[in-house]
Length: 314
Image (cartoon, rainbow, N blue to C red; front, side, top):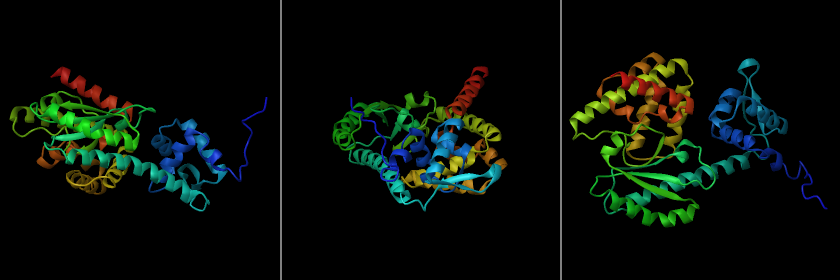
């Protein structure tokens, strides 16, 4: 029987080895999107790889010359080697990947903006928002609206999503929530599509508003405590803010710009105090905090478990 898995020329088909494993693909993506060289540990975290798996893949990429070392000793970092003849093509490929997803979010935004009755907010939640969805897994689109209009708005969105699903070859599931339902849900990672954060309380319900402010402040305290043990949260939050600024407009952009100034100017001590402060500005900005989005699963579970324990003792 004739073999069909014969090797190919490394010179004529270098992409076989450059993109030969998922670890290589993840590491190159992280390096392309990084704005500066990364340590091996940070590179592994961003690529969601074990340190051991990342180290092996980095060594392979170094051997192929598509990445290079920066610095020396324990502070040594790596970055994409721009002199490699395929580096521009690699960057272009990941840019196209990012533009596709950005185009999908923009298409969802346009669907909402053309509705006859507008919802309170629309966002993506679940595995896609967490960056952990599998092939063929649906995108979960959440809608916030008043109980009287919710079903009609959700159905109108579903009708208009047919063309979007066909264009981007994606399955989209729509689920609606009222404000009362949102107030009893635990915070989760989300990608905002339209409107303000769904976690922002309504001003018309003073008692609930006060309770939500208290819970928001407690959430801020937990994040502040985590910052003591995980100082890498701050650069991770900065990276997240810059990434979101490159994709969004409107009210969310204004909040992100304010967070950018905070992350650039506040010392660690001031930042921890701000996250748990009682003032109007701190209360408002906690609703769009970039920290929740950059927590690992373990860090997120730590915060939620501490909040559950605190609520049980009240």
